[in-house]
Image (cartoon, rainbow, N blue to C red; front, top):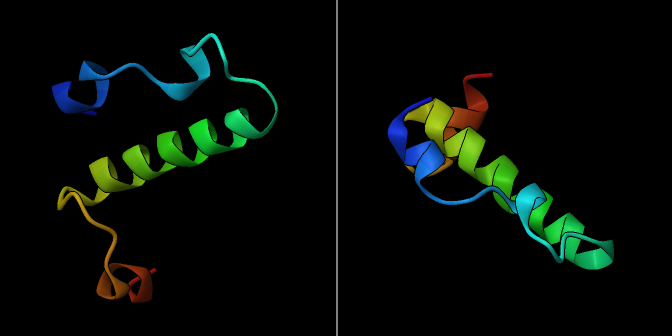
Length: 51
């Protein structure tokens, strides 16, 4: 990963990462990983069809 992935704190490190908030933090963290992997910053239909 690049520096951009580590510049903001990850959801699982948040003190209120419990219950429903934990699910939202997880989805946000997952989106960050996917966007970093794609290198475009956005998950597109074209990227999904390539898998």
